[in-house]
Length: 126
Length: 377
Image (cartoon, rainbow over all chains, first blue to last red; front, side, top):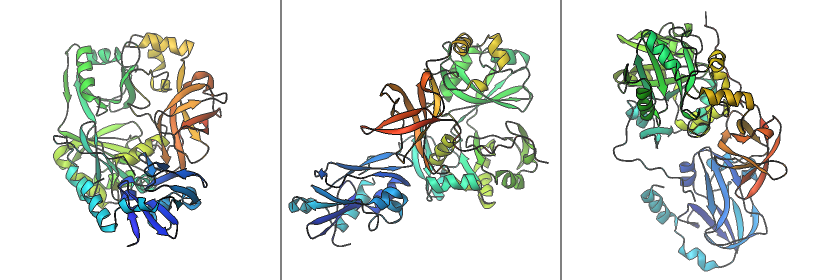
């Protein structure tokens, strides 16, 4: 997971070529509890760094999903829409949320690496 | 990503099972001034399903256990408050009811049980102190009233509960629904009723705080599991049961909340209780709004305060509770709509994050009840 980057809003991001795959962290899923609904941004839509890019709902509450970087949505993961429980079981791999065509690579620089994120998640307790 | 964080305050009240909740890795929330478990490590869906399949233990010790002592006069005075036929209520029998104001607005919903020379009233945690003051005033301070903080209240719910409890307290299976009795446990008197709020067969056990933990451990040893408030909410919602502060509040009446079944027909027609004039008027003339079940067509969850529209985009009401129902395996909700649009199968639209999603008015409960009406042999 060394090539993963993380946001303070508990999203992960993995870059391959000009495309970033984005999902929510295991830590986030543990805090949310059982996820029962997910809404993803449409393919072809543009999202802005730190802007809304979907919703996840657990049995407890609805939470916004934010995108850690800007770009155009090139793919979204219908498998998690059909079976949101996958987000709890495989959050940092199969249950990715959407893929972006990266707009500005420098936006990735401000994100945390795995170690930094783990420290952040532990300290923020949220 | 999530903004849902609940902090635990200093000076928060704890129940006698707090240590046990921690041992079982509870996640806590503050609820009505108490540190209560929202879920344990398996999560809400597993806890919900376990209760429906086997037996769940719920710490409801935060709820008020109010004992009011008195004889014939008390029965008459309580009838001036509650829309119940208390004169004909047998000892050890329970009724669901409400404490209302003059406008029939609901201060609290409650379970009242007639005991030998007293009544036991189970009150919502957030309302119990206010209820106590209201009742004290309404009863003119004539009777001894004890809001007993020395007793815990533990609910055991689900199809295996009768079998499990009977291994610990013999003969509890003889109780029928909404019926209770005193039993001997560790040389103390404990009060057990066959009741609950999950749509399952079950019991509520009132016992002294010092027995609560060991009693609960024995239930766990017999195969029951601790269940948090999260699953309690999904269970009661599937069962179509109201939660105070959501479906019920001071601005809603029992007629609007579709709870007229809980009022004695004789008492309602004769009147003479607080709010009775409004109740009769509403029963004759109807109400503007009424509580209904709501089944969204897709997977989207309509949370509390979601606006409800009819098929010609007229705002007709609001959701009061909404979640994912694990046994229904889909979203479920309750809310209030304009009476004109309250018929079952009426197509409605729920406005969620700016988009309108189709749903239908439906009957309640979402999940069929499994109460035991008659006593087991």
